[in-house]
Amino acid sequence: MIQGEIGEGLHIAIIMDGNGRWATRRGLPRAAGHRAGVAAVQRVVERASDVGVSCLTLYAFSSDNWRRPDSEVRSIFWLLRAFLRLETRRLVQRGVRLWVIGRRDRLAAAVLCEINKAESATVDGRRLCLRVAIDYSSRDAITREAASAAVALSRDGTISPDLLRPLLTQALTGQSGDVDLLIRTGGEVRLSDFMLWECAYAELLFSDRMWPDFDEGDLDAALKEFRHRERRFGGLPVLVVAT
Image (cartoon, rainbow, N blue to C red; front, top):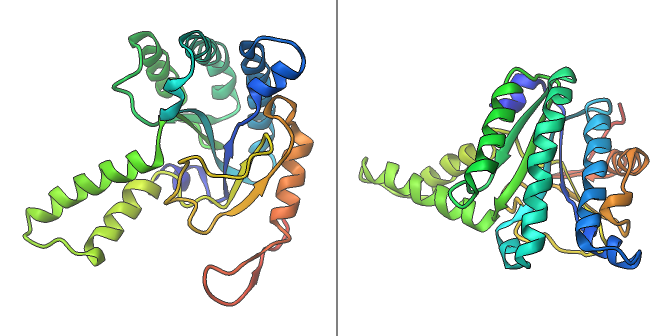
């Protein structure tokens, strides 16, 4: 379990929305918004491990994003490769472990190569687990893990919800734990097929700020609000104590 290896802390997931609209409002091509979004990623990763976050999951490219124009998809993956090449050394220096989640069978060989190199180089990171969701669909992830679990259980001749649920929980959250706080930028108020199982009891925060404008102060403000919310988990209120 990566989170356990790194240490207990908050798991924050972010839907990084608004890159294209940020660029359009400035009369720039959408690719410029994605480039500006990379700078926001750098700021948030730098800040996260300093404010009690042990796992940070970023929604970089959903399985539905393949529907976008080819030129935009190419620019996104070019930026991803550039980010991995240029930032891996800094991640190692800061003790950040990179882990890419999502399907890999549809990614180009050059992209897979950069992912594998970055994951291998950062494998000893213990300060922060940075998970980047690429070609990711929560429904797809749940379906695939449920199918695998059903096959495993069928060997014993018994498939029941009581047996299936712990297998799914381990498969989907064993690497990172449940999400504590989900942040979505860009003004939209929906989950967009992102970490549906893991966010069962997550606190949700929706921001009107476009992702390229999101900075350390915004992350601090989100954490401040989170720490003043009551987390009940179906039971009596439990006040989150500020640290």
